[in-house]
Image (cartoon, rainbow, N blue to C red; front, side, top):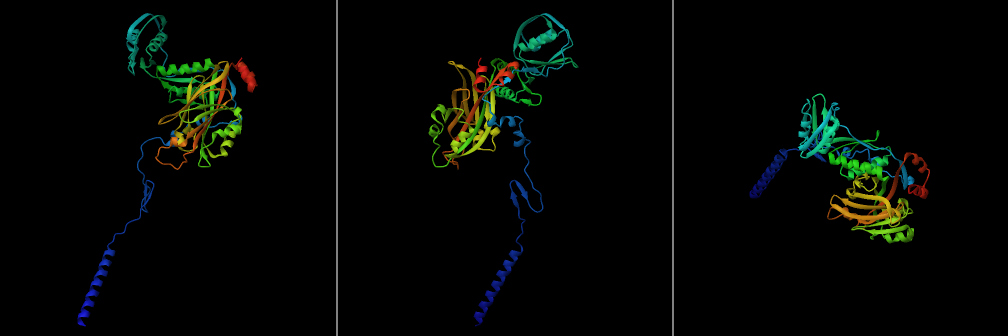
Length: 442
């Protein structure tokens, strides 16, 4: 009995020690504050949101701000003029950073042979207090002769031969030489004409254009070659008398079944006479169609087989024979796979085998390179539909939730703008359709 009592006592002591130990351990367990992590900020009841420091970069929304977009990213399909006229206006390019006026001095019997521009001007101005400063080095030697001229005309000739620009600082008596100049283009009043010249300049890799839509001017900077290229664009606009424009809708199409869109159904739906031509590309196909197939009738056809989502919409224009591009992402309603797509176009209106036609080439490309292209010779008034371009062409991940039969569909409607004499413009605006075409082709 005593032995049993002893065992019970030992058991009670061990239990008491165990409970006491648990109590002691529980007593010294530290208590931590609860921390909620929200995105990149750390918040608790004693702090304010803490964000990591960002680099001094322009925000995306400010980067995408553009006064061009409201003009580029809307198409009034209900009031579209396939053929239109604008009055001819003078387009002038002037340099705006030439400094003060050169002193009114005369130059006679001045020769130079295989000399740098700086050396020629120092020789020319040897008897004056004007000094020459090169802001950028010039590496082209020039040769010439001036019989008689004003000093300003002589300096103009010398710097043009050397393909450099100068500016005169009267206060310090210095002529500065540089390889870049700043220019202003006095544009016509018609906004489509402005867009055409801007797009042609961008197509010629002239960037950083500052457009003032209020006074219709454009300021840009560039070297001698840039100035020559822009001058050539302006001369072409005046000489060729035509501008081409394209209005565009871009759709993503989801088939309602596990099958692709049956494009052959367009023949019974619209009639064979309304499908003018089929142009295959490396990817997809371009259909040249009649005016009966427009954005409304095309969507009605697509709704029978699929769900249609408008990805982007817009317009762009080019002088006859030049090239331009339409960036889908600029005019997209939200970020999508296809917004990386760029539609580049070259086009020319003229007489081909006795028919007045538009000769165009479209190139569809992304940041990964060219996707496909189409060469199209069509009549004025015809539309284009690019079909069979898989949405999976834009997928960059190994897997996607997008159906393999989803397609990109591009609807393109060309417009012809004729530049005519101002006195004929009012007469032409009273004509429409075939009568206007006949008037322009006289």
